[in-house]
Length: 339
Ligand SMILES: [Zn+2]
Image 1 (cartoon, rainbow, N blue to C red):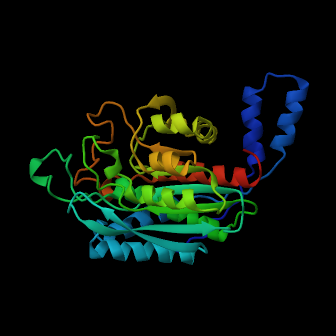
Image 2 (image 1 turned 30 degrees about the vertical axis):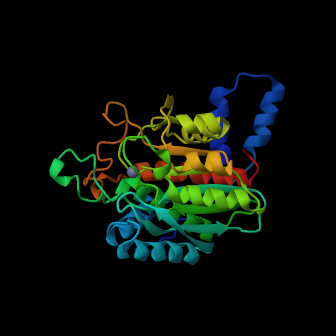
Image 3 (image 1 turned 90 degrees about the vertical axis):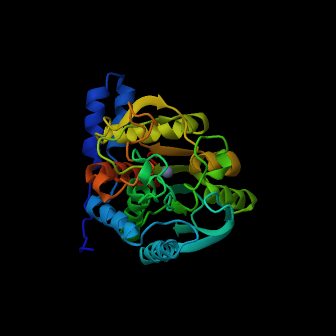
């Protein structure tokens, strides 16, 4: 990996002021509020998409991240080491998951990194780190017994969060804490939607642990899944809108003000059973899902979804940047009490 030193200071005051210049039509009183808000300056570190891209490539270097395999264990250790290196307090949470590729109980692991672990006000960030054992949506039938490389599906969310972790290590938050959870065994489920609990095994385990714990809970969570492809369309996902509509609207508002409205569109899309579903229903933490749901595909997902073509070729740095920038902006605005 190359040498990164990209911390820069963004004078959001200017940006914020310009939003209000365009949107302002209110009274003198509202203009004063705007002025006082716009006078706050927050330092948001610059998200580095090259670094995020490399974190995805690193995961694929280990091979397929399928629970029960050696390459899965190697990647688990890599994720824990990276979070530790960036200054997080790390927990590797092992659990037994009945998986449907083998019909056996398999050891799986959530990897958790806590930044500012004593802060009571916390934000949860998540992504699944396992890759699917079978490319059951590959257009070529001969490939449908092969595993999925998982660059976008799994790898991209983890890559963006590792870069955010690196930034939090170099530019610590003052007031809030952040819990980054890499969920395991999300993507080994039975296709067809009949049995949602075969998906998101790691999120189910984590959520049950949280529901029994007295530790401070996150105010809300943001899940990233398939956030790496070019020309993404992040509609407002159905379960996110059911359980956490305010969080969706806040995050989409931030993204749109940063200029990513062509990706973060104001359109509701069908819900997806994903890790956030279990965090919402079991841990009862409102958690949204930023997930690419492009129009015009048979599955509702990107064409490389659950195929052998989900490799580094589909990863686009502009998309990684838009998502990472948005999430960092949300964190630093929360830290400054501006959300
Ligand atoms: Zn998947």
